[in-house]
Image 1: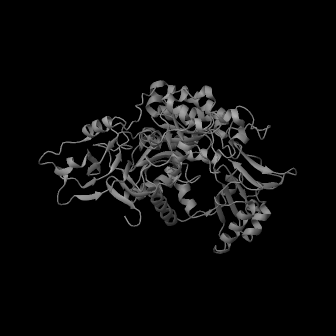
Image 2 (image 1 turned 180 degrees about the vertical axis):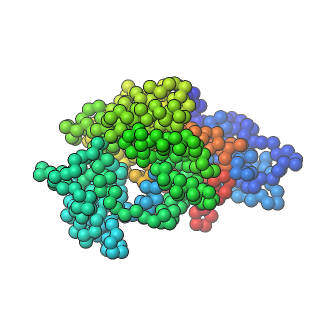
Image 3 (image 1 turned 90 degrees about the vertical axis):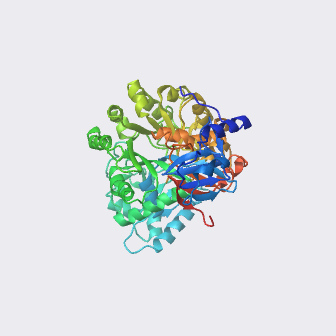
Amino acid sequence: MTQRMRWTSAPAVVTAALAALALSAAAGAQPADLVVTNARIWTGDPAAPAATALAVRDGRFVYVGNDQGLSGLIGPGTARFDAGGRRILPGLTDTHVHIEGAAMSLGRLDLRGAKSREDLLRRVREYAMALPEGEWVLGRGWSAESWPDPTPPTPAEIDHATGGRPAILTRMDGHSLIASASAIALAGVTAQGPPDPPGGKIGRDATGAPTGAFYEQAMGIVTRHAPSPSLDRVRELTRRAVRALHEVGVTQVGAIDSREFVTTHLMALDRRGELPLRVGVSLAGGGDTVPGWRPILAWAAANPNPTPNVRILGFKGYMDGSLGSRTAWMLEPFSDDPGNSGFPLAMAGSGDLAELISLAAKMGLQPAVHAIGDRANRVVLDWFEAIPDADRRAVRPRVEHAQHVDPSDLPRFAELGVVPSMQPYHKADDGRYAEERIGPVRARSSYAFRALYDSGAELAFGSDWPVVSCDPFLGVAAAVTARTIAGETFVPEQSLSVEEALACYTTHAAFALHHEGDTGVVRPGALADFIVLDRDVLRIDPSQIERVRVDRTYVGGRLVFAREGE
């Protein structure tokens, strides 16, 4: 079990921290490239949590301590920044983003704000009117749970709103979509077929006619017909996505993307010096068979660090779907859908995913597996347990989401050395309807941040962007306050302190991405990734955490984002 020091801000510890962190500024030492003074630095190191100044040389911290210790590190070419007493944190790590999906979403219709089916159709209509002739309407982000009438629009209604243009509107969780009648026709879906694919479902009415809903691995039946953007357009949107991450203080991500996107865009941008973001990749898109994955795993094993800022960690697999779409794989049926316990996706259902996990671990690659439902989590933990202990500890398997876990399975994460890679802002969203879906008893071990943290598991946080916002302070707020988007409180007994939540975005997240020591901490020798906040997240009322904004973001000591006026 992981032995974790507890956070404290006692004066004696702060004094010891300054002494421990300070490097000697002996005469003749090389000047730093950058010094920051007059700051409140939370270092991310429990043994030495605080400082007021730092210095950077060649992209790494060379000094962390008090302002007085900087004198020998300031030369004629040293840049200086007076933080004005503001809070500084290590650069934040988001362990779960889909960079390609996020980039594409920046060029599509955002439906998160739709308050009803009529409002959704209005947004679709206005968006379609501004499109050039022949373009599809591609939208994402809608969720019907808070609508007065949660019934999604019909294919004919969507067609009417688009003026006959094909349309695909993906639900916020990315596990289902609704399509227009014209898109359904182009996909060749009728009352006569095609059949549901393994791990997917086509929504049909009593006559067999498609309702417009496509779930999980049936979504590709429609989406494969949508036109693809140009290479230049994808590059432009990818740069915008990286900028959006910097704006909220994210300097490192666990990216879940295809090999094609990684090689064609991320690596290409990095070689040109246009990717100021540290990226640990879990490759996706290998299909539903082990033979389909073998060449991808072989490439991953042969290319662990293909460009300076891109590292290939392993692969991403899927056990099940989502709570919102009722496709999570549960031990018992959904409370509001008694005939439905969800289902495993194709490779999980066939058992081939267990073989893929074993194969990856033998190759030294990290399995990162999506599991939402309690049955999905139990089965994937069983499969991880089958990995020889030394191999498992080396690759650090991750369960992505780990949202609904049976209480008897919670201790297994720490016992097995499995990382629960969770997205706290999902709690703010799903908390609106989780008890309706699974009942109050099962909900008590949902989003079990406190139970997992206290067990010694290396609980790591991320966002799942573009499913929800990439702003980590929304995640910190959800983990600390247990407040939902609707303003209610959901399982507050699983809440963390602010410093614990920050640890899940820094040191724990860096561990999950095999990058601890170098990232997630402000300490001499570590990479100089840090952020400057507009207010002190450690001192404000927790109700104000979601309002925290980032004034500056540095990657390797280089300023990559500054808010207007900075």
